Structure formats: C-alpha cells, structure tokens
Image: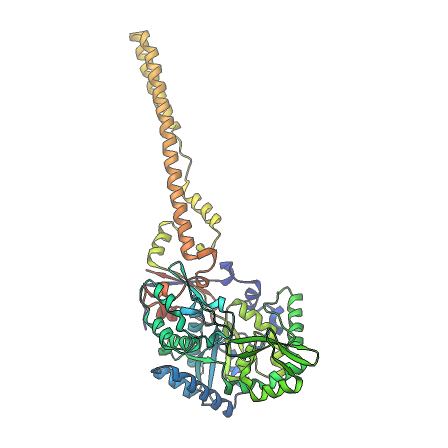
Length: 525
C-alpha cells in the first residue's frame, strides 16, 4: 500500500541519547559483546540461522494444534492468518517473534513498532529466501502477573486505568469489569470495545485486537499458557527444580558482562519458575527437602513436585530467565525482536541455550520512531529546526534559537547622534537670533533624548517578549514530541495517532527498515 505525504528521515540510535551503551556497542558490532550472541542480524546471517534451527514434525503438529485451539476465540480468522498457521506444519516454514505484555489498548506505541518490525522482517526474508516461508509471531505474555504495569494507557495526554481486584496471570483475567473504563473513553473505539466486551479473558481480547489490527499482514499471536505447549518445557522444569541450572549459568554470564561494563538487565533466582493456577502465580522456592509456593500453603516433596511437572506442566510458569528458552522450544523461530533492555538481557542467556542445545536466535532491536504530525511539523519549521535537532536538550535548543534571533543588540545610538546633531544646528540658529531661546532648545533636546531612550527599552522588551514566546513554542513542541521528557513511543498510545491518521500503521510499515538499525523520523507533509 502506497502511503503519500510522509517525509522519512533517519538518524543513528546513539544520536538520540535515548539508548544504552550496550545497544550502541551491539549495533556497532563491538568485539566485547561477540561471545554473548550467535549471529548479528543481516540478511545473509539468516541463511546460517536457517541451517542451525532444528524443529521436528511432531513439534510442528503440537504448535499447529495449539494455535487452532487458541484461534477459536476469533470469530472470523483472516485468510492470511489461517494460511500462516497452516504453513507452520511445513518443514520450510520459520517464525520471526516479538513479545510483549498484554497492555490494555496496546499500551505504549512501541508495542505496535515491535509487531511491524516482525512483519517487515518476514517480508525481507521472503524476498531473500524464496524457498522458505516466514511467519510473524506475537508472543503474548499472558502469564505475567504484574497487573499494575498493564492496566493503564495514555490517550491524548490523559491516563485511563482499568481497576480490578483479580489476581494471578493477567491473561486469565476476565474483562467483564472493564465497563467503567470503557465508559470514560472520549469516543467510540469499536475494535477495542468489541474485544473487551466479547472475550472470555484478557488473552482472548488481546488476540482479537492484534488480529483486527494486523491480521491482514498474517500476524499470528500465541499464548504460551497452554498444557499441550508446556509439555516441551517439562525436562527444563525438572532440571530447574533439581539442579538450579539456569541460575548458575546466567549468573556466570552476567558477571562476565558486568566486568565488561554492561550492567545486567535481569536477575536470576535459585529457581526461575512460578507455580500457576487460576488467581495464583507465585514463586517456587526450595526450603530443605521441600518445594514451597510462596505466600501459599502449597508444598511438595522432591518426588511430588517432579510428578506434578509430569502430570500438570501447565502449572509451571517460566520467569523472565526461562521464558525465552520456552519460546524457542515451541516455535521454529529464527529471530527475537525486542527493545533495548530486552536485547541486552538476552545476552545473559547465551550459555543457557548452549547447555540445552537450542539454537540461540538472532537478536534484533525493534524499530523506533518519532512521529511528527502536520501541525507539529509546521511549528518545527517556523522555529527553523530540523527533525534530527529535536533530540537535543531543551537548553541547547534555546541557545541555538537565541543565536538565530539575536542577530545584534538593539541600540538607537546612531539615532541619538543624529538627533543631537540636528539640535546642535537649531541651537546655533537660536543663539544667532535670540540667545534666550537656547535654554528652551536644550530642554527640547533632553526630551527627545529621553524619548529615544524609552523607545529603545520598549523595543528591546518587545523583542525579548517575542523570544520568550518562541521559547514557549519550543517547550510545547518538545513536550508534544517527547512527553515527560522521554521518547514518544514509551508514553503515547496508538489511538492518539491512528484516530487522526487512519493510515498510521501502513505508514509505519512503509517507513520501517528492520535491518537498517536506524531511528526513524516520520514527518507529515
């Protein structure tokens, strides 16, 4: 789809000042980070990844069956999605995955950016490797239990919050108590309202939303909270309970990264598993010869917990350390797309993948963007600024504008001299005709001098007032484009842009190059 009237420019991630040194070093392929990943993301590197990723026929059937079950919650599956689900049965089909929490109304913009990066990566790989099929996948973090992180979103600068006293994995939350929130919305948003009103739980609602927004592009959303899929994790669960293997490996790698100056993004536990039931997701801890579930009376002997893992794998939930391994066990996946912090924490997991002999995926930084609406673009141009200059600190921008505005100091000295010369001539004429008039001429000269001085002050004050107005315009522009002093994508919601520009998602699809690793600036013209 061709999207017109959009100017696209790019800049280095480092130039934005919003990304860590870890990410800057990764994108520059620093040798210091080389031991912590497999292949750097280039089109050519995916050829090697294709050869290394092993995924058998039985695994594909399990995955296909689970997806078919999960998509029964979607009333009418887009043919492109169904085709991709069916293609996963073929040995030459692979996935490109991104993951995110179940933020209501899609949460911050970067959720959308992640998915579009996955879709565009599949498109590029399809052109490069026509003998294969590539499916974009959104991994829904349904088992996450931090409700406070996902229960709100910001729309046109106002925060809306879903209040609920439900507990446990958020994907299992009923959406029946969202009516108060839906009633507060400034206008109708049918895709979202229908999903929340007509779904059994938040996982189904989120699937319905991503299907409505991205189904035409073949996006497949997967919920790892599934008994059939969890069977693949059983051997990992048993080893985790008996050997605490992941903790040792991740701590070793984290220490190595720390020595190189890269602070760990996530911290490992002795056992990186939660116990999961309706209304409950709590850590499993080993105390003596028993395995206890924190904040409950649930306790297992060593034999009983192994039996539980065998008979009910769905009751064991991986935390942030083991979730990536779980993803790669159940998907024919080639690459994981994440934000800066996500990519950085995957570096901590390299040894874990090696020990389990699971191919470590290509790590890709998602696309990031600054979207400048037509009105904000007009303000920017009136201020004489270029898009890439907007990332500068506000004080530096004010200095830059001051340099443009204060061409020279306002002074009426030349006019004062001219008036003084004129009065000197008048005084000479008065002296010749009637010397008594000289005093009157002097008084008028002083009045004129005072008037010029007053006018000089008024003009200077008017100029300063104009500058203050310009600075205020700059501050307002910065706040609109960098709300709260952070990147737009970390604060604003999709609806803040799509409401005014229905072509917002197609514009992003056209603008984002997932393998260029440049920050994208989209400017409406």
